[in-house]
Amino acid sequence: MASPEKGSAAKGEDGARVKRLAVTVAGRVQGVGYRFFAREQAEALGVTGWVRNTARGAVEVEVQGETQRVYSFCNQLERGPMLSRVSDVSIKEVALVDGEVGFTVRY
Image 1 (cartoon, rainbow, N blue to C red):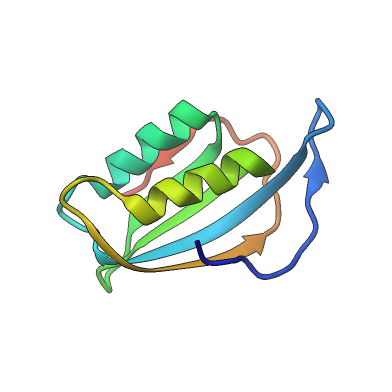
Image 2 (cartoon, helix red, strand yellow):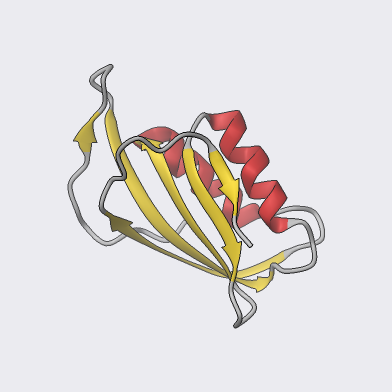
């Protein structure tokens, strides 16, 4: 898995480290159910954020949650749904978002 740029993580209510990552996934990732795959994985792992297609054919994701869950989610993004072919994943740490609920597909 690609490593994010260095940054600091905050602590959540339960004392676990929390971080937010911005992820760009390139390859055959549009028209294959990738956004819905991402939402399903996020919901299973209990992380928040959003996913959307870009005009350049990639998929952008922001994900936030307990550090281990966020990295597990990123590992799933590298795998992708069955019909996808992920060629590159770039990850960077971004500022936490307060009050975010759920994981949404943006259009």
